[in-house]
Length: 159
Image (cartoon, rainbow, N blue to C red; front, side):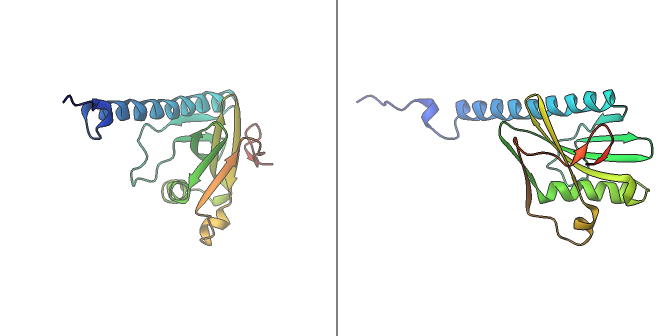
């Protein structure tokens, strides 16, 4: 009797681990691409911007992209999506912790911004400092492709 089990059918095999690793690499590459595109987009609008090259499941309060224009500092969390993007509360809190702990400016000059990249379309949503200070952040924020953002990149402020 011959065994008809294929290596791909057995969990934990080298084949499945390699396939999973390739999927993770592709996923990270998409994130890297969107972050790089955002940096270029910000620079075209007159910002000084830099991508933070850290895999961010870490506990460090670092944003995906940091930017500055005049006296304003921006911390961006970037997601790539096809229809909707979810931003967990922990990632949003990291933006505020970064701005609060490391940027010695008043809150009116510090901005935590969620950036959702849908192919050629970007949607930006600035999160209110008051919500973070009062502990009123939602468990997660969702941006749909059909949504309108509340942050104007050209002016560098809420719409």
